[in-house]
Amino acid sequence: MYWIDHTRLCDDIRRQCAHLFTALGRVDPETPVPHCPGWDAAHLAAHVHAAFTWVAGLLNSGTAEFKPPHEFLRDIPDDAMDSEAPWPVYVDGLTRAHRKTPLGERIAGEHTGDPLAESADALVDALLAGGPDRPVWTCVGEPRSRFWAAWGALEAGVHRLDAEAMLGVTPELDRDVAEQLAGFTLEVVAHPSSTPFFDPRFARLRKSGERILVRAVGSTGGPESG
Image 1 (cartoon, rainbow, N blue to C red):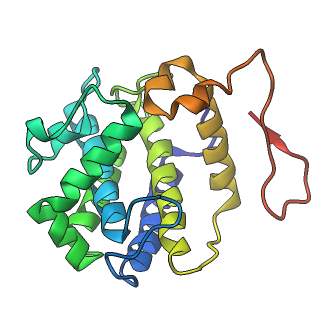
Image 2: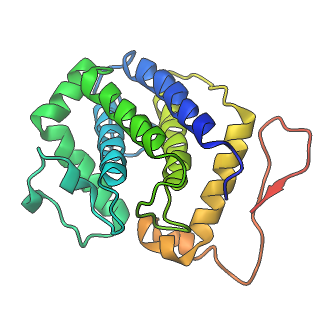
């Protein structure tokens, strides 16, 4: 599942976040996000902040058990969230609730303000402080920090694409990292324990050993498989 160095993935989180925050700073908070129906730029910023805050909290607590994101966001009342909702519904509800809080309004107003940047720094600092083998809960595979380094690079990269799509920008990604993250995604999606964290349609991709073939745009090589 992992073939790129932990530190390099952490560096990529910082790099992708720099592009993400720049793009968010260039659009109005109410600009719709093409790849996230129903969300605007402020929702996207709130989501990224919540996601990074959650995983930094997991890493720093060293928990071996799942803890939902809203437990690490003190401005969201517990009764505002339905912890039993399907994960995609929960994440959307969390994002909308966080967007309406004073901190969410601040993030939306400042675009690239301190709370958003600090959440990314907190994630990377937690990843580097414990190293790749730091014990922590994960939804798939060995419960180690290296999972969250790959997740963080994926989260930052995907939402950079979302943000730059609002500007009509075609991003240039590090091919090695992009291939790592495509492979990581396919392995995670294919694992039964990840089912609660994805749209139910992903579970229907698991058949009887068929393979999904992925080719990089502009690649002259053969397809990558997962």
